[in-house]
Every structure is written in structure tokens, then in C-alpha cells.
Image 1 (cartoon, rainbow, N blue to C red):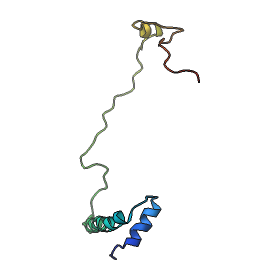
Image 2: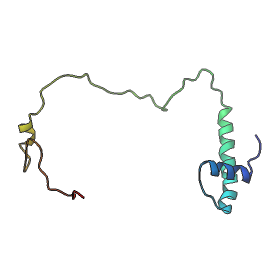
Image 3: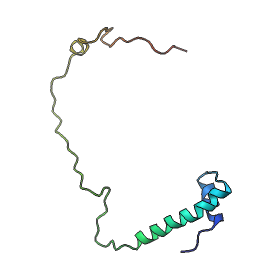
Image 4: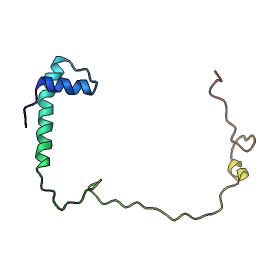
Length: 98
């Protein structure tokens, strides 16, 4: 792999719309170089026969069947409310209309 240059980092920063100082550019040359070397190492892993996965542990989504059942009526839902108006909870206004 070709060596990463300061101009390469400046170009990448420009593409990402990140404003880096000269010191940050110099620092990022080394840091991005290490990241690219790590990615290159991982890319050399033998992956034939390995199934793609989204998570390292098997995950099973626990669901329940949809069952139609009785729910609260408006009166039952509002029975514990301090105030109700037109089958709605009545609460103090906190915002002006402006």
C-alpha cells in the first residue's frame, strides 16, 4: 500500500468538510496510516465459508402473536386524570401561541 501523505489527509479532510490545523494534519497522517494498516490486516483474513453477520452473538427477536383483546374505554383511561375535557387529558398550558 502506498504511504499516506499530508496532502492525502488534507484532501480527505476537505471531502469530509473538516477544518484541520497544520498540527492536526501532521498528527492525522500517522493515525490514519495505522488505521489503514489495520484494515489491510483484517482484509487478509481467510473468510471463505464464513457467513455474513450483523452481530457477533446470535440474536432472536422475541415476538408475540397479535391478538385482538379488550382495551380501555376513554372513560376508563381518563378515570384517574385530575382533569379531562372532551375525552382528553387536560393539562396546564406551558407554551404561548406565539
